[in-house]
Amino acid sequence: MKLIQQVALATLLPALASLAHAEAARPNIVLILADDLGFSDIGAYGSEIQTPSLDALAASGMSFTNYHTAASCAPTRAMLLTGVDSHKNGVPNIPESIPPEHQSHENYRGVLSRNVVTVASLLQDAGYHTYMAGKWHLGKAPDELPYRRGFSRTITMADTGADNWEQKPYIPIYKKANWFADGEETTLPNDFYSSEFLVNKTIEFIDSNSDSQPFFAYIPFQAVHIPVQAPQEFTAKYINTYNDGWNALREQRQKRSKELGIIPADSEMQTMSSTHDWDSLSDDEKRFHAKRMAVYAGMVDAMDHHIGRLVDHLKATGRYDNTIFIFSSDNGSEATGGDNPRSLLSRLGLKMQGYRNDYETLGTKGSFNTIGPSYASAAASPLAFYKFYAGEGGMRVPLIIAGKPISDKAKLSNAFTFVTDITPTILELTSTPAPTEFYGGRRIAPMIGRSLAALSREQVAQVYTETDYIGYELGGNAALFQGPYKIVKNRGPVGDSEWHLFNIADDPGETKDLREAMPDKMTNMLEHYHQYATENGVLEVPANFNGTVQVAINGIRDRFGKQLLVLLLTSIICSVFYIFYQRK
Image 1 (cartoon, rainbow, N blue to C red):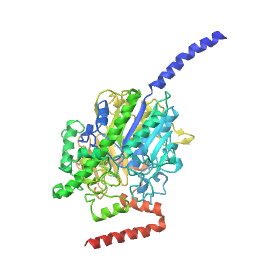
Image 2 (cartoon, one colour):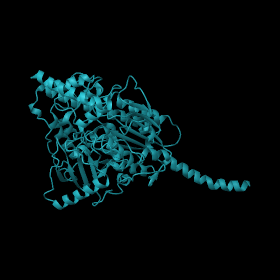
Image 3 (cartoon, rainbow, N blue to C red):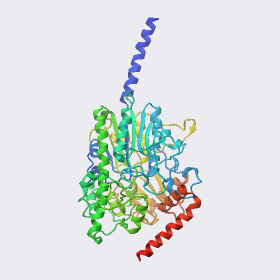
Image 4 (cartoon, one colour):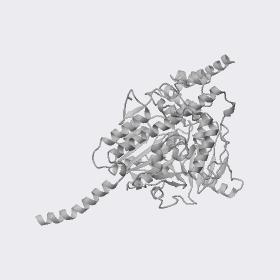
């Protein structure tokens, strides 16, 4: 009997040792998502903003220069975490912006559907500790929060955004800023600043487990979503950086991104119709606009600083060498706020929300800052358009995959990649099986993304062939990608609602429309788009649809009820007319 036990033990030990080695070899994953960060907003992509932590990741990993997301936050987040198209995962638009004509359709709820499984759930099943600290925006009912979607520890801001200095809603459609800890409503600390707090919580979660299991940490920052706010010591670095205006900044970033190889050396860029004439501004107006952008730069800088704290902590605790970092943005730069934020109407609206936008305190607690469409175009330089639109400036953002398990040198890839590729990439990097047709006893939608692991290691040059195509639609703005080509339609007020054809590999600035020169290509890609729209249940938006107006209408209805909606809208219209009458 003893001999049998010895033989069995001798047979079992190598298997146990192999299993332990595999467990130890599985990398930690840190998935970092900035909010509304433009294509050239970090140093590694051509920015003047100091981002040494992210630049260091780029210097030891793969920087993707042709990576695309949805042009709005919630659809990107849903695709990022599931690998499933936004029209299949329940989040084709932010819930606040879905028109009433669409709300009866199951795939247009704006909440992450139960017919998809998150990468966090799959990693949790595979033995990973799973953490999230940051913005969710995929549902805020108890069973819709990340604590019920695969994350074992969470600190969650459930809305489109919130104040970065205090627990306060940033727009009046919310009664309060909805923060949750492990699925329960929570209160923020008095010394709260969003980027610092989210990294602190991530470190706390990581340190709460001392076993040998790897971890997955998802950190969706509030930076640089409105209100754009930053500690004064970070803003002060840039107080004189933007005195030459948005056109000069856009050209400067284009030049730098060419030098870095981020875009082709002979590519061009266009000036957006929404860009104001800098030279027509008064000296006081120029000073104020420069400060707006300085606060924005300070907010990016502060986020990078706190990312650096996390990296330093992982190094100090011996976890860094076995950690893979994935960094990106949920969409392009945000143009909200206009180029006249100090008008009487704007200041009155801010005052009603308990905000101000004085020059001296801009970016500090109690202030509300935006950068407007002109600087948003600079933040997206050298691309066209910005957030919400299907132009490259709305959809093409930085993507860095780095870490010793991947690489130890800087690499660039111009291969087309899409947000649905992130979940398959994480699954391959962690040796975690992808879900089958069923999960948890229910049928789930299939992932459409492709792993970028081999691309990150330079084992392949592309993950999509010349015949593959990826369709996209959000709020009536639409695109289809195939090989180096893209057809795109942008609605007003900035777009013309017409389809255009571009070679975005050679012409990322979308300056040369090829639809007349390549009519067969245009026709073929349009057919593919209509096929995509049919297969994915894409609904046409109403002819008069305006996303911003819809957010206001839905928000008033949800907060105050339908009976007060007409009364409140009437009061607002009357107030606006009264203000204009008084000014006249």
